[in-house]
Image 1 (cartoon, rainbow, N blue to C red):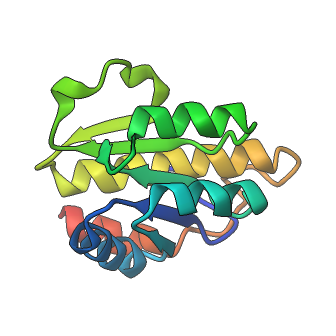
Image 2 (image 1 turned 180 degrees about the horizontal axis):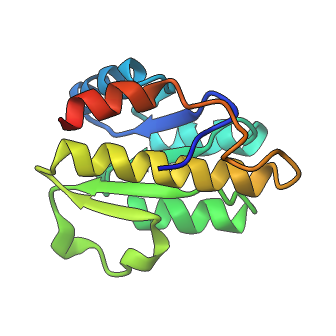
Length: 152
């Protein structure tokens, strides 16, 4: 895995606050800065007013008033290009998985989920900072050591 030059920020969006809290605890323990939200329309408003600084959005598919696919389409209409990872218990309702940087069906393997988060965030940071030093010269992402311990 590569390395990151800044602390990654992840927006967790799910109408079930227990899911947001659980994932938040896991990702925060690995060094991610977490922005929690249980209201998809509020999340869209917040991202529209200030999309900078978020490197990954992790969302559920089935939420009140909007699903994850509609959320991504709305963000793209607003020219917000942050990668979106989908976690869902209703994969059969997702018509177009290509909208998402990754798709995980609940329940999922935690190590695979964490690895996907790290790869997507590394790619997004590199996309946003093309003039930065190569990953070989960058400082190591603080969660990498914790991730390696978790996977052993």
